[in-house]
Length: 178
Image (cartoon, rainbow, N blue to C red):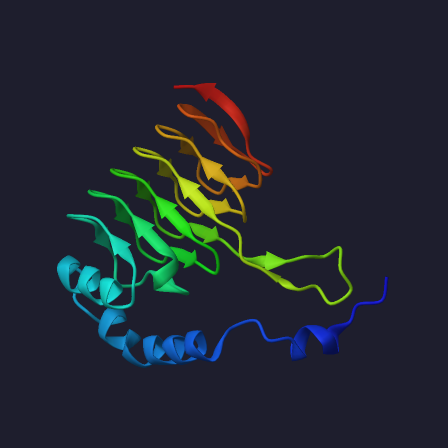
């Protein structure tokens, strides 16, 4: 199959309104990124101003990289650690009391490799209540991690993870029931 690179690059992936909002978000992002670590409320406020649904007492570190805040839904008492990437082209839903540890990459977007123009896909990711995504883990598009589940450090998750299990490795496999 010949890849239609020109078709991909010329395709309209975002509306003008979304493009304008993304430019505005990038303009004010330094106020998020360079805020002192303890200003959890300020960062919650900034994300809510851009349409994110952020619960109470959520801790989001200033080095977190969020692609599209209005595609983000985070429950109460959740923590998002240093250098986490929330690539929220599609909706990312994170439950209550969940932890996403430093360096994790939550990737809710990709390309459809089965088509010559490889169009952009924007698929959801769900992380359940009380789940823990450990350091440097990767969650691919269209994945659900169940409640009380643990995704081990540097695991690569490309399939759903059931409730109350620990997974690890590349690709992630069940290690044990919790």
